[in-house]
Image (cartoon, rainbow, N blue to C red):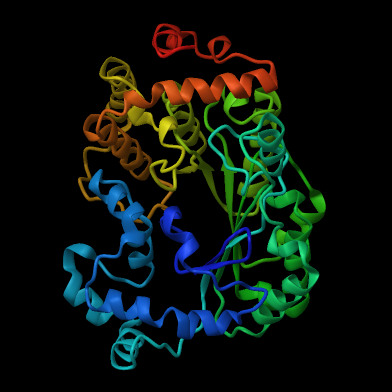
Length: 415
């Protein structure tokens, strides 16, 4: 399950954004266990009946292009194989839980074991593809230039009572295995350090894996001292390209500082045997330099995870590229796969935590498939240009200083 930035519970970390307002149970007035056990029961019944739910669209879109989806990631955790579904389901240690829910109207005797915790929008970056609900810096900028009328609601973890309620529940859970924190920027959000400290004080850290994502603009030794005490850490490093265009997209980052911080995290993470992944959100603006990320990951034996194909804003998807520009990106990605592909294995790697070259090539291939097969959305380019011009007026920069290759394309669209 998930707690979003405003404190509302969600069934899944990949739940389609457009439907999130449908579920309004909030940490401030609803018990965590009540939501997980009781309020999710109807959804469990629907899934056990084999229904295809609209909120699962994100995963189905990923699978349509042979990209490993969140659904598939969860299946592998419980030992269920799509290609051998019936037998692997029956042999899964979770079959007793499924049978119980099936016989008791979707109720469960289980507790939450895997959570994504959105800590709010307190952030020192204003990434172009982000939203005010996930970035306070972007929210302030959007309000100033008139893109929004008011700032988004405060984070749930700005309220000390909510944080205390959450921590107390965590410390009482017998089988909490994994917590993944995102922001905003986790390392500057006070609640992150508070939660980590309390988990260490309670002893829960010894059996728990912590995942978190940071934007390579922060380093905090006091938080690192807490993290190294946990059973395992999954470190997500947000970056779009090892190229100056990263500064434009993840404004106001500096690529030289980003590279230095990246190297520092890689050394520190490997020293502590952490799982390290480069977290990317490929867009039209970074597509031409996407290979720089995969090449760095291969060189340093890191994972790469792009959580899904960008849903919103739709005008920033890589599918807004016209055919000739798509083909240029496809050629780059295919050259990468031809260089590194391990021809000795044809088996699909579902486990995205597998930091092998095969897993990376699998992710690259999903973008090749997407670029080859996703509908042409180049009619959205004028919307993109209108947005970029507004942001550039605020930030005093120009995309053409970073991507001169797009000048003809963008001029034609109104730049």
